[in-house]
Length: 349
Ligand code: NAD
Ligand code: DAU
Image (cartoon, rainbow, N blue to C red; front, side, top):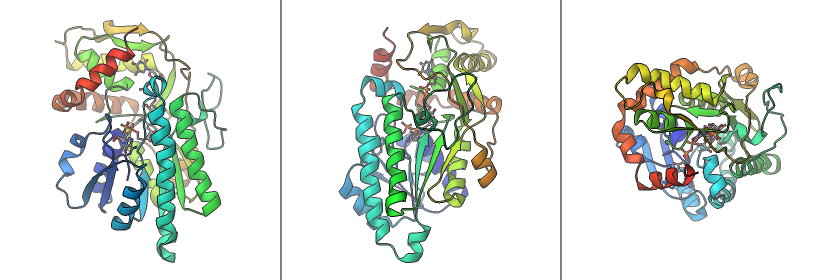
C-alpha cells in the first residue's frame, strides 16, 4: 500500500492486520500528513513493514515491487487537503498526477512479468474521492458512478486526472484495476487541518471555530472504519475495471456538524475555557470555488458487494470526539511548528 501513514491509510493498515492478517508493506513519503505514531501499535508486528519513500521514485518503486512481490497495490498516497491545493497546487500535480503515473508504470511492468495465474489475481486499487464529480444543487440527484467528472479545485482536478490514468491502464493494457470514490471521512488519526478534528481541537482549547461562508455547504460524512471496510470489499469482490462510489448516505451542512461536536463537548468537557462551545463558532471568509454540496449514490456497492456502513453519524462522531479527548499526546505531536504556520496562513484574514 501507499500512503499508509496518513489518516485513512493508517486506519486501513490497522484494520487489515486485525481482520485479513496477511502481510502489508507501507510505502509513504511522510509529508506533514504522514505520521508513524499512528502505527505505533503494529511497528514490531512481523506482518508489517514500512518503506520511507516517494511514489514518484520509479527506481525505488520498481525495486520494492521486485522484492516484496505483492498480490495487490492499494493506492492511498496523495496530497489531500483542498485549502492547501489552493495555496500551492504544485505538490498536488507532482504526487497525485505524476506520482500516480509513475506508480502505474512500475505496477504495469511488474504485472506484465507475472505468471498467468498471478496476473489474473493481481489488483491495483486506486482510492479516490467524490470531489471529482463537482458540486450539486440542492435538488439534484446524488453522484452515481456514471456522473460526468467536473472537478473544481486543484485537489479534485489532480484526483480526477489520476482516476483517468487508472481507467486508461485497464482499457489500454488490461491491467486489473479498481477505483473507489468516497465521500468525506472522519474518525481517529485525522490531521487537524480538516473540519472535524479542527473543530474538536479549537473548541476544547477555547479558540474560534472557523466556519467558511454561510456554513451551509453540505458534505456526506462516513466513519473511516466503514471506508476501510468498503475498500476491503472492493479489493476482494469488486469487478475488475469498475468504479464504486462509497458514502454514508449522511448529508449534513457544516454548521450541523460543528453544532453536533459542540454539544458532545458541552457534555464531556463542561469545564473547558468557553462553554457552551458553540459560542466559539466564527464565520470566516469562504474557500475560493467552494463546492456547495456533495452526495453519493451508493446503491452499486450495496447491491453488488453487500457493503453497508456500520456507524451512524451519531455513533461515529461520538467515538471520534472521545478518541481525540483520549489522545492528547498524539495531538501535541502533530500540532507542531509546521502545523501552527499553516493555521496562521490559512486563517489570517
Ligand atoms: P492524508 O493527507 O491524511 O494522508 C496522505 C498520506 O500520503 C500521508 O501519509 C503522506 O505522507 C503520504 N504521501 C503524500 N505524498 C506522497 C508521495 N509522493 N509518496 C508517498 N507517500 C505520500 O490523506 P487521507 O485523508 O488519508 O486520504 C487518503 C486517500 O484517500 C487520498 O488519496 C485521498 O484523496 C482519498 N480520500 C480522502 C477522503 C477524506 O475524507 N480524507 C475521502 C475520499 C478519498
Ligand atoms: O469529499 C471527500 C473529500 O473530503 C476528500 O477527497 C478530501 O481529501 C478531504 O479533505 C475532504 O475535503 P473537504 O474540503 O470537504 O474537507 P474539509 O474538512 O477541508 O472541509 C469540510 C467542509 O468544511 C467544507 O465545506 C469546508 C468547510 N470548512 C473546512 C475547514 C477546514 C470550514 O467551514 N472551516 C474550516 O476551517
